[in-house]
Amino acid sequence: MLQDTCRAVKSLGAEVEIDKLGVLLHRHLGSSIFDTRLILRLLQALVSARESAAAVLVLICLRQQGLEMNVFLASAAVNACSKTSAWIQALQLLHEMGEDDVEKDTLTYSAAISACEKGKEWQQACHLLNEMVTNL
Image (cartoon, rainbow, N blue to C red; front, side, top):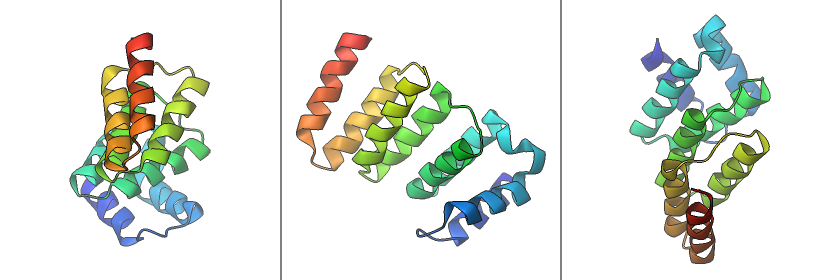
């Protein structure tokens, strides 16, 4: 089931609309759509398949539909951002973690710092490093 879902998400392409992605996820995952372990495995599979942007979109889509954020899902999504130098999305996810009272850990900070570094956003990377040292 997970491989089929991963392939279906990839087939939608990079410019997929969130609504279409939501329909696809409901069709493939059914009542398991809010199973955080399954979603985490899907995000990891997408990152492994070099579909990091799709992994972030899946999380955004499911959050809009009511999926509760946790440190594992957030870390997987920030890790996906670090693979594609999507530093803005990484920072946005960190911000949302704070809003949702999800504790940031070393892995999440490190992935966000990596995304900033790959995006050549050194000031942001240094800011996150200072924040990490202060908060952890």
